[in-house]
Image 1: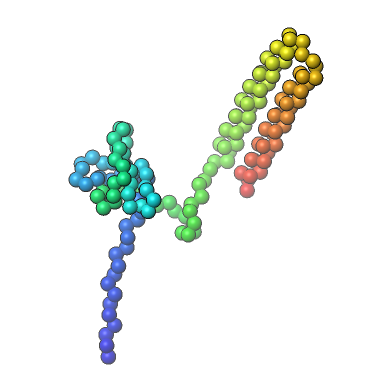
Image 2 (image 1 turned 135 degrees about the vertical axis):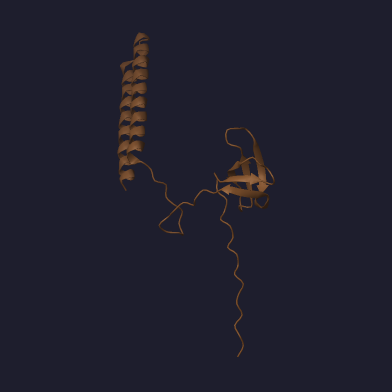
Length: 153
C-alpha cells in the first residue's frame, strides 16, 4: 500500500502593512512610520515622526517591521469594522454650529435691515429678508431633527 504524501506547509503570508506600523528600511538605524500603503500593498510611504523626513514607495522586501499595529477587530471577519462615533458629541457640535450660524445670520440681517431702512427701501424688501431668516432657522431645525433620528438608528 502506498503512503500518502505529506503536503509541505505553505507559509502564511505576512499581514498587510498598515498606516502607523513602525519599520526600519534597509540597514537604517532610524525607525520610520508607515504613512501610506500603496495599491496592492507591496509599496509603502514612510516618514519619521516629528520631522519632515519622508521616503516614498519603499518596497516591502526592503523594510523590517519593528512594531505592528494590531488589526482592527470585527464581529464578522468578512466586513470592515464600523467606526464608533459618539452621537452626543456629534449632536453637541452640530447644535453649536447651528447656534453660531443662526446668531450670525440674525446679526447680519439686523445690520442689513437698518441699512435698508436708512436707504428708504420698501417694507416688502425688509419683509423678504425676515422671511429668509425664518426659513433658515426652520431649515436648521429640520436638519438637526433629521440628524438626531439618523444617529438614533
